[in-house]
Image (cartoon, rainbow, N blue to C red; front, side):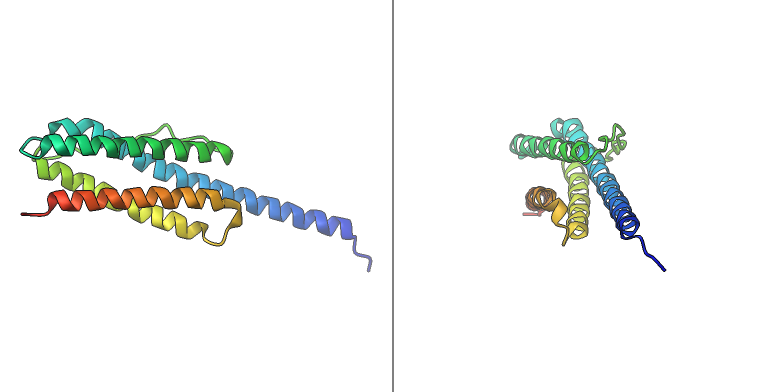
Length: 163
């Protein structure tokens, strides 16, 4: 029986290309999910930051503006990777939860919840990319975003800590 080496090589090249395409599609889907959460965090900061009242409100508002700037940077990074990988950044948005009671600590607790979700999702995304040399730069950028999200959690925990 004669085996056509060229046909076998083409077959395996096709299989490999399909696997790479599937992997990129999976990464784009993951990045779009992260992007949805970043949009929500940004929207929450913009919607609620100036509804904070109390002795610490102005200092917290100023600090949250820094968090908002970080979220905007995260959005740009995620969008860039999505497009680079051949995808389209999502245009969808998650609805902003109405926070009741509309109080200083309730707003910060909701923000803390979103930051914990971000830490969890970024950690999973990074773990999913482990061992893949194709996505090394993406993994590094996601690790940097994760570090900022963890810093946000730390800030919020300190503000919510009773004196």
